[in-house]
Length: 242
Image (tube, rainbow, N blue to C red; front, side, top):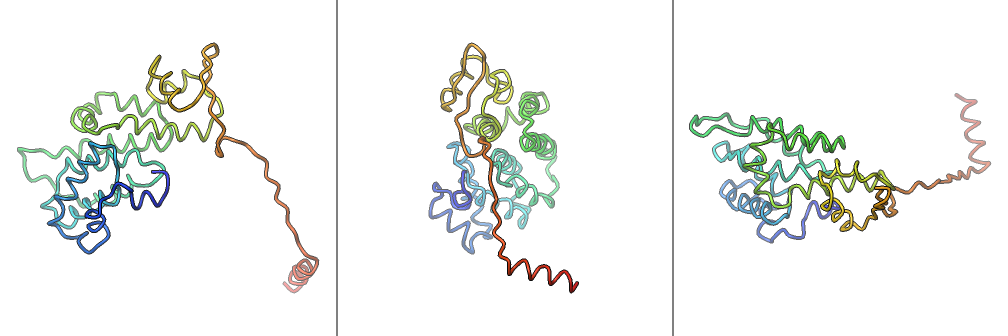
């Protein structure tokens, strides 16, 4: 999502979902199945609709019997890569009163995975990209990878788009070794990705040049204040009275 308008009303949102998200049916528990199906459509298609997903979590909050931990985990995964929007924190804020697990035969995976997902989110927010990939590839996140993100089409590329946004804003040039740790790509995969971005790799030096953009260009700004004599007189007079 590049704009607040697209965040609030994604162009891929159907009229049916728009009515559920924006109308009085937002709080109708009988519609939770439609919203859950829409979430899994997002998982399969690389689309994303935060407000629709928040509506699901809100329905779970009002109707604990509807709670589905797998759905919540998938919502958090989609929100993980929404930077710079605060989607992840919005979702977390609605989970404070989630129901306790009452079925010992089907243990709730959320309590064990939530700390891992939250730490991944924090690492992304802090731009600690090598640490993010290290945790994501670790044994701690094995269940998350094997059962959830593997089903989320384009998840790793979505993370890389977050990285690219940050790199574009902070660098004019960056070493390929450094960028490799940021993107978790090496060799030909890294070269192909850099080429796809339209960046230039100097094979002799290993330095990648990033095209100019408003964020990575340092331009001096001259601020000129135009104070009239009459305004200055008023300031002096006021200071004397004080």
